[in-house]
Image (tube, rainbow, N blue to C red; front, side):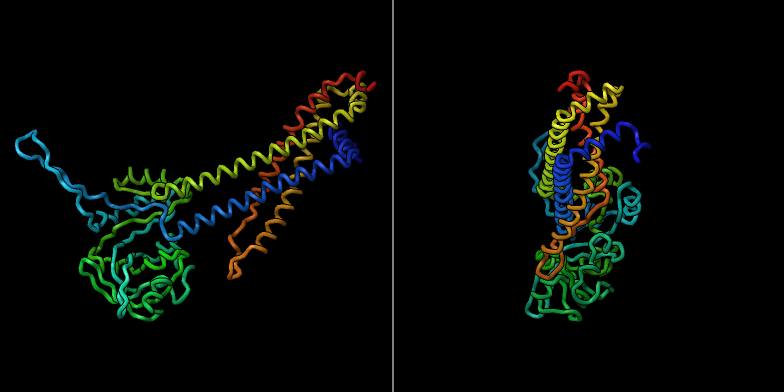
Length: 408
């Protein structure tokens, strides 16, 4: 039945079949190790993506803005004399010079996904006796919605904007006692004053954002903030968030403006995410070493138990290489089969996790994706681990003297 198989494979599968209990235990150990790796990798990755998604939900990956205004010290008295002491000047709301030309240049930079001009500044939202300080953002909806998914976060009304419309957060709407269709007056320190109609109320998952952020059409924001035709920032998202700082430096070098990535502005958060990633890698390595030691220990015992059979094989003409391959194949089979068993266990555990842990509204605590590539990765690593674990027992088996082994 197995005559078509090479000699080493026939011997390896027969040895595994004869030691059923040992084979079962080592497969269980390998499967549990792989299940732990796959399950925790999926949970930690899902948790990390959830944290990133919530933290970066209301902001761009990179913000391009004009350079700060710097007061230049002037010489006092005679040439070469003491410089006059000049206080740092207050920063004004400025527009990016020729931002219409810069936007397509930024889009052409590798790694850039979305580019959206924004005009933003402080204002007061006034309705009756209520007066709240807010941050007005004038946006181009089609582009900006690809950065901050406002359509998905609307809890009332619609996300569409016209020149007389405004989108407000749930907390601000509550503070103003306003709802969809109500009018709110917005006034700025620079003298801008406009009355807009609330067409939508959003919830971005942050009380501070819902209380402060206000979205209007770009032209409406330009008029309100006294920046006709201007854009105070250019918001950018990138394909790979971990490369945001590299892309920001490329943008700054190309257009000559300040480009701040989320990595620079959230350094502590970035360090925490890196620590979580490192912990995940260390955990995988630790479990992998444990699985390797388990496979190696069982195969070492197998070499001792099968020493007579090994001696007979050597006496029948099997080379040291062939004997060594027998045990390498056993290690590979154990790793491969154990990895698929473990992946099945992990898939069931992840389904159970999703079913049991839910938010108060019944939605999943956070999304877990069972990535097929993770299964293939686990299978490859487990197989290589099995092969590596089998090297020492295999070499030991290959070195057995056939006469001594038969007499044992």
